[in-house]
Length: 214
Image (cartoon, rainbow, N blue to C red; front, side, top):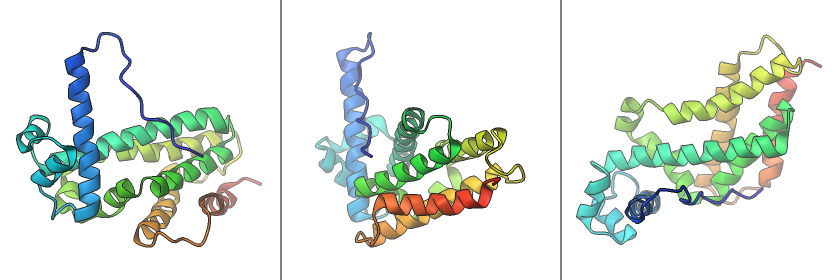
């Protein structure tokens, strides 16, 4: 399953200056992903990100207050893109079957972490090492991402497919936790013995068997 292409700026009324501003913002974010992945968040400097993005150091401060601001923006924007991608895939590939929805979610998440290794390393490793980020950031987008899982469970309960006693809030964290731990191990050791599809199906099957009504 391939990832959806990144959306282009096609809205009418956008000026050339606005497009250039958005493009430079995106370049800085992409550069930060590469630098944080390569050097680690704590060792990375604004100058490193500016050099990677091919902009002046001062240009960074036109868009971001500091390195933590870049990290938060990176997380918000990338998770926002992932949410859009997975919702589109659920609509196009899963239909109304909540079991298939969970399978599509799992496969897309693992595929993304495998395809975008630098992003995966930042999301899986660097964010967790930033106490300031974990303490101050409200994880709004991340909660929205997990709510996709709990929404699938609720739909399955309404259809009589999943057990009514299952707590969607608990399930979403357990299900994502299994995917997250698998992705973390892949970041640490890229040579994994199982295919992405096989891994996604295995994880999904274990959880579905636990909440199916039959």
